Image (cartoon, rainbow, N blue to C red; front, side, top):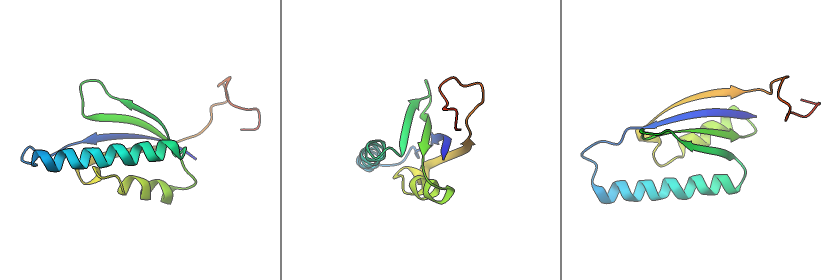
Length: 97
């Protein structure tokens, strides 16, 4: 199942720098692990914002929820999830979709 997720990060201004750096490093490591596993298949920065657009390929709503809630920045994040389906006019979709 494919999902488009917008993530907007809102770190508190009074968060100590070393804490911020540690959380951001953990977030990067976790995101890269999920990409290597084929779960986080696209990741784009939104220019001028501390935000991203991502596409996840997971087996269920519950799996996506677990992935998102385990993000180290989740506490500081607002997410918007949109389930995706193949489009009949997409020339890249297989005939069986």
